[in-house]
Length: 165
Image 1 (cartoon, rainbow, N blue to C red):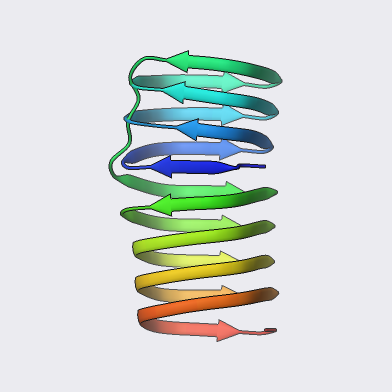
Image 2 (image 1 turned 60 degrees about the horizontal axis):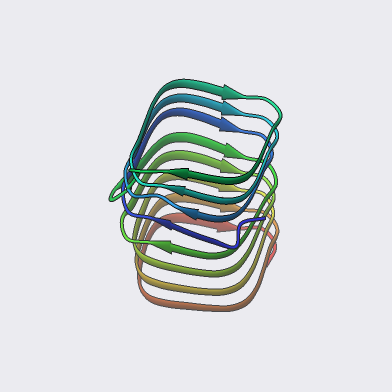
């Protein structure tokens, strides 16, 4: 369960997250080559600058961790698989995702300024409130979507399939 996540720039070469519970995360600059996290509970993590070459965390419990330099301005994700993710509030400035598979996501509030997806598959998503300023989607498949309120200001969709809404 993530309470608040602010990401400015983040580059992942390959990231696999199985189960992560984070209360508050502030990231300033982060470059990760390969990170595997399997069971991580963090109450509060503040990082100012952090560079990972290869990190594997299998069962880690972090109560409070402060790292002095970690800021993210741009986020590029090549392939991300999320299996059980609950997000309360997410602010994204610029996000480019090549391939994303999301299986179970519960989002309370999402604000997206600019978002470009090459290929997105969403199996089950519950969204309470979504504000999107500019969204370009090449191919989107949504199979089980419940949305309380969605605001879209400018949207360009190349191909979209909605099976159940």
